[in-house]
Length: 318
Image (cartoon, rainbow, N blue to C red; front, side):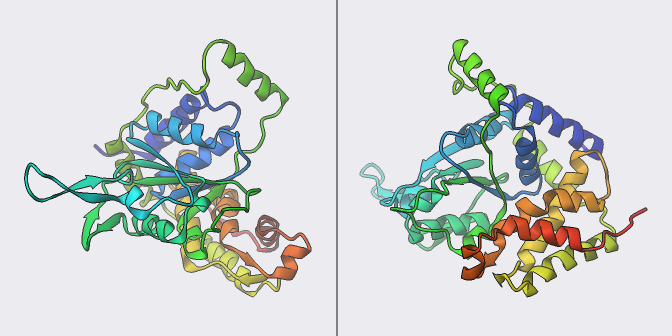
């Protein structure tokens, strides 16, 4: 079956509508989650507690027909708690592999920054290499494989900040944000008719179709001038005086992929500069490492990316 851009666009909008029956009022955020799925990337949610980060991940897994596993990250979590381990079987007289929660389609790593670095490293291998190593033997992970991780920006005690290398593996960082007054009233209204966490959504697609969509995205056309626009945006971050470490080529690749996915979401088989601008902040801001004096002055990575977007001449694409 050859899937078209029109098919992808229609399916994506169906997903937004279906997940939106559970997650109230966050359709723009849901769109970005779908872009992450289309690009075969991992997503980091950084926001305050109680804002439906876990609910979003669980609802999406049901709507896309994928196996879902949730791991609560804690300071005593060991790598084997994620990857699995070998257990001696008295019946057979040998060791049997007990697979861990990482052998899934959608893994929710809840409060990821509470786990020690060794455990984070085990997850890093799975995220980057799509495999995990147990007792010297490598096990590939099936596609699709998506990590949705959450971390709380206000909790510092008992946390292990994610290393730059791991943050860079997330194709984007998203914030859910507080609901407005009308949305919060809708949440309470739904509670009168049942538990909002009792997720009932229709399965819109299945894992096989996700893989087909991911492959189709690769064929979206991106003009050389738009590619150059992406390169200039990334290059400028490396010479900005407020920045300690600019965006790596992995960041430009993420922006490249997400721009294609954004075009497909709106039914186009080619990328325009507005696609790049729409995904630039979630794709790039978390990769910037600011100088200490910049942080003291209240500068944030998001404002730097927006400022650069306003500076760079936008190419004309016919």
